[in-house]
Length: 296
Length: 296
Image (cartoon, rainbow over all chains, first blue to last red; front, side, top):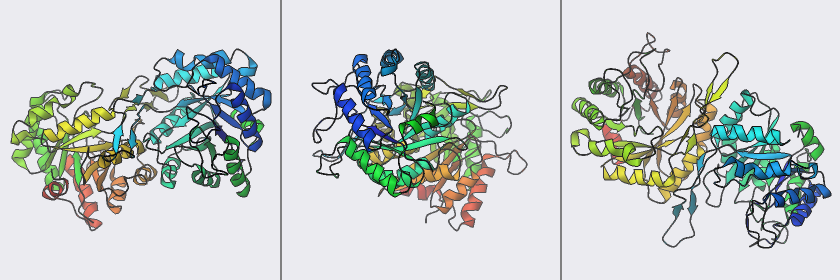
């Protein structure tokens, strides 16, 4: 069994309350990446943020600057988001990746594609008057044609597409993309559990993970990692490590008050996974090993 | 353990090739329902079809006429489709249910709501030149707000909403609908496996069913049935019967060349489930029992 690939999901669009260690500026992202690499991460996933306010940004220059800051410090694989939210236009979703591809120092190694057209319901339970289901009109469109086109553009930008899987329907689409050459083998896929009221992914429980694993593409070479938005991913990480899988986690998904002094850094979270990977006798994969596996 | 609820899915938009026993006209639908009821079905699910050509129809009068033909012959619960396909307008999706509700003889008992906004990819394997993935632009929109509104209209039409679940994300939405009173308990849900190249549901395998069952709404009263489009559902039916579940199947989903002379009727397919239900010591639920459970 190979070493555990750790993808450090360092910031998403998360606030610094309650954990102030969420990186915003390109320099902060570069520093977080360096520390995560030292702790055992081989991939870093980031969103561009306004350096002063932390507001979500889609500025290609911020994406490229963050990649340069990372690459100046370490050899980790770089996976910026497509920042899709509900952006319908592929040029708007993908433009920053093409800008990044103009220079080797800022090129993306991996690009995450969301393998689902799906509603985005959110169950809010902290309200007076009982739980409420919000997000009536929210849905996220990633048609099969859009995903084919994003995979093509990803390759054209010198990067490797990653399959972000939200449910079993996503895994079946991945299987078909492997059968028809839209994706190459071995491929890298992240299996998304969602907690904290977000209902679009699988529950962040053993059952939620097992439901994914029961339906992995048969006879295909897929490096799968668990991810868990909105809850502590370490129990799932232990299961994934046991089962030959990999782990994607970080302060972008959850503040990890359980670790250290209650305000851990991204590197502290990565270190907690690396410790479990070593305890299980697998150790962690190096970026060089991941590049060799994925030809990234 | 209660008797097995059998939902006879008698026609969908299926052709009469290879099995000519697919009912089209209201009279044929009524006769198929009567025979299915005798064989052990307690629910009949149908689509309106042009009586001569079998072409899909959305004519409210054909829906109402079929309900009258069924009710004149037997006491089975009536569940017409919403025939949604990709119809975006709720009035167009739901209008026939409201026309049916004007008279007791044609009223629907159950109305199926599709609990998913999802792509509809189809893997075609019988081509020269290898497999191809088609349906690039096809997706099916059922936003949370649309589903809330359809549930409200279903009740207003004197019927009970049924949750058609395509994946684990659907089950989580169902759980939230139960927590927030959009659906009542006990509720009835069908878990859709899809074969024959359609990739939107779970695979029609033990693993596909187990992945659903691992994530049923916790602490909620859900009568779940398996359904399998595009393949023989009987192996899944046996599993469901073993596990306390129910069964939805019929010639609308699959031609069942494995049964009898190779061209069974819907009632023959229902009888094959009823036989398994009796062998497992559960027997079948009567329509009266199902009405009592679901208050339909």
